[in-house]
Length: 26
Image 1 (cartoon, one colour):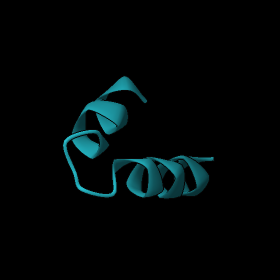
Image 2 (cartoon, helix red, strand yellow):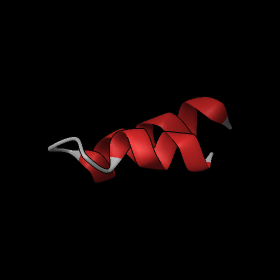
Image 3 (cartoon, one colour):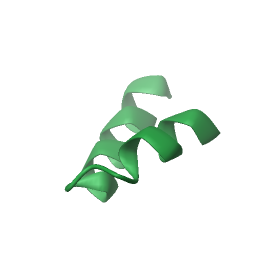
């Protein structure tokens, strides 16, 4: 999940992307 955070962080909507990725992963 660390990789997802690193990929989502630089994005404009990092928080949204991270949350979406986490939901999809879980």
